[in-house]
Length: 544
Image (cartoon, rainbow, N blue to C red; front, top):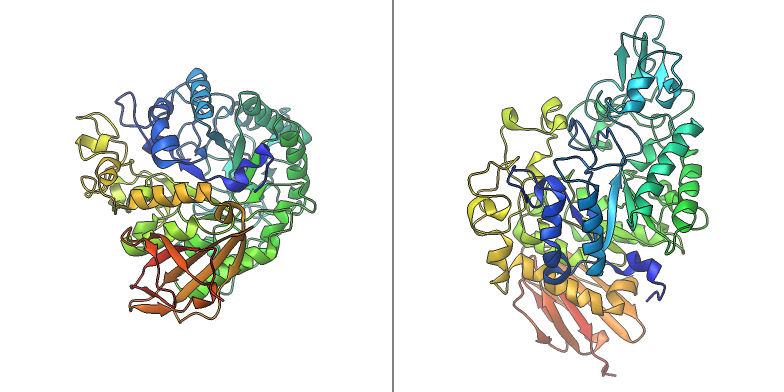
């Protein structure tokens, strides 16, 4: 185990909070920062996570629910104010938890003062703070780049007679990170929050900030089924080579790392980086531990739940993560369908066990620990701009309010108040209050895994090794640190499986996905029910 306290992120577990949906404290139907404060004891004591990551809470017109920032150095009134934020940081730190905040460096709101100046005239001093280009001779956009949320990446501006670039909505113009003034202004924003005591940043679309300076057309994708998003819409019809991820981006994160390291203790960074190629993904660790602490690993988010697939992903991560780097895993977030909705309740339990026993930092998404599912919302009632523009891509389904109790509005907001998104129909049984009383619940499975992980050196800092031979549909691995050996096994099939682990000696079942098995295991074999998982401890008195 690392003894340096500044490396807390290597042994800790991070919990993402989507503030709008976490806890409403003022009865307006929208979650807020005071609501997070009100649930601090749950996070630190009942659940037992080590850090919270707050999705954006900055002033914003809410075109993309906070990812269109109009002021990077304040709090939107719907969430509170800076004094409440400062209190949140203090309350978290007093409980031993770190605070990570979301930062959005690629684009601002079109109502940000910078952009209002930039679009006011071609000779405005901030004109070059954004990406402006002339039309092609026929009046069409400068190139074929497409926006993630549908349509062209270019929006015509009548006032100044040029196009500006937006990788997402037209209300989210991209900043020009090749302008040193932009870079300095954004780094000052990082410092603003670091000086307020935050422990690190989740960097939104971190690889988007630098594009091809020649603005070349992206090539056609001959196999859209293997596109980046794997969703409906035109985005996957192109290979996105030139509109993001230019190699110059690495110099930006080297400079940011210097800033983070200048604080005592050094602060943490994780980047949202959707890159399928493992070797390219790993370059964001830097050449010598000098860029991001971690690029988010999203491979499990889209993986078929098969033993061979899961094992290949884990072994790829182990292979490409540099010696100074540290792996990480994600199974849910505010952009993807919920685990229980993707896989069902049995596999959702396996997912929890996998996430919390692999080598690397796990990130949980609020509500997944209760087994919350996706909520079907009719298209005409959806609020997510992506879902409204490109049917089938909506994210409202996985952003619905946290389900705390079986009472009115699931305890998220006051009785009689309409939540900003509808609750799931199952909230009276799938909620914190009910599950705490059930020893076999999903929440108690998470609590048991988190508590064991915290005190197990093998789990939070030990080495990883796949176990062979194993039956078909089995994924098994060893975690080891010093004299502690922990084995995790999964049956990823619909028939009972018998697994021979006699070479390890006597085994103790620490936790099962059903929360219904514990104690000494059979000495020569382990039987696993369909879709069951077990965490086992190798006892010291190994048989010869």
